[in-house]
Image (cartoon, rainbow, N blue to C red; front, side, top):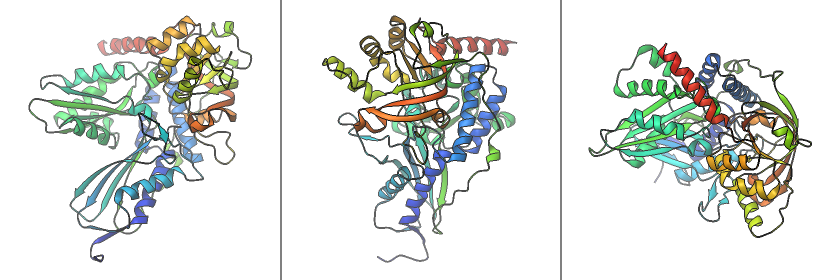
Length: 509
């Protein structure tokens, strides 16, 4: 059948290029509304540690915009929402799904800004990396019109991992359930961010709505100014105030701002049920909307650097400088939760797959390929370097996933300490306390900034694991915070508890 020239014709290459360009664009440019919201939160924050974390997030974002490198080392699983007009005709030889995935493939293998391939096929079996971050998760809708509208998002594993779902009874309180869930999400989703909430429909509809809600602009301040006009807006305002009153704060360190906005989409539901889902967007919020009208690929204009605040972060006199090559047990026993350290020297890296390999080797009585005695291990899967980089963006991954390996690693390898993101669970804390070890955190959402402290990087074990291999990094003045001390005291417990009380006292006054 020939192409009807009176209809909008969308060329295969235009769609592929648009998806690829969109993913490159959002890898290094935050949406302007997000930057403005973080800046406002930074200005009003009273918790020093939370304010420092937001400073690093804002500085990192500006550096990424200037250097065109990923905001986060976790460049995300690609989620695409496509609305196809019924009057659209395609000039294409492959399916729409294949076109989207080819765009993903080209984006993630771009030689000037290589993005991290994070997608594993056979997720409960071989877990083999697909190598190019395909396939994307794609949602389609056929709508009236003669255009194709596309939303492209890249969702990090840390925020996706904190997704929540429940089938509430019709009389159950949505607010109560959300306030119960948010503290259980910990800090691995890298607050401050946005909560997307899907309410109603069926189980899968609620989850899709929660994901789609995150594509909306941050506008809670405007809503506060004009007031709610429907139940959904009333719910947004109530949850925004009450979630922030939990005191969780940036990176879970305790503070005034946990969420920058609450987004809600709802749908009619069966009389017996009230489905509800929460999906967070983290400090590496990455999404964009574009329209194809047959005139060619979408155009993405670079934002002005004036969008970013001129913020600097400088360590004060209380900061300890630590040489990882000479640090002793007596040294780490002096560190207190909340202390800021600047690390220099050599550290090893390792995350889930490396930990699984090492603990399996130890169980078989085999010698590890690298000596961990007296060393620190950094939970990271970095982006490959380009140009003159030692390594690409290399921010921390969520540490709780390593909790089940921690006791074995500390007791059988001589490992001294760990560096990661967010809180440790009780299993991990118990192992740290029992072995007089220590756990430090770097800022999630500041991956490019962190990588600037890394002067050399080489793979020393398990090269077949790709980004999950064990590297040796040499660092100079890498900023971290003491999260769990040698006695098992956790800043992720004491910080939010303190700020929850402080916020409550303010509200009462």
